[in-house]
Image (tube, rainbow, N blue to C red):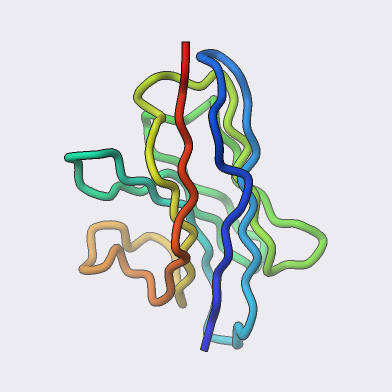
Length: 125
């Protein structure tokens, strides 16, 4: 069973930066993609960024492109989300997810098989 644990959430000032981390354990050869999603109060969960674990190109939601960066750590099952120039609309619970392939955000469950419990990010003035 894959377990995902997020960390790094908290309060950050408008325009500031924050790094989220996700450590995966129990992964198998079928775990080929890791991603970050977020859900703001009253809104649906949405994809933020995803990265293939085989070294392929990352993909970003348009709302974060150029501001956020997803990357893998030296341990390939650790994924980071560097959030820069944050906006009020970036406030949300951020979830780490893992699955066997990327590019499935429109699928049920966003195409991901495993989810972390989430970490809260709040943008303040």
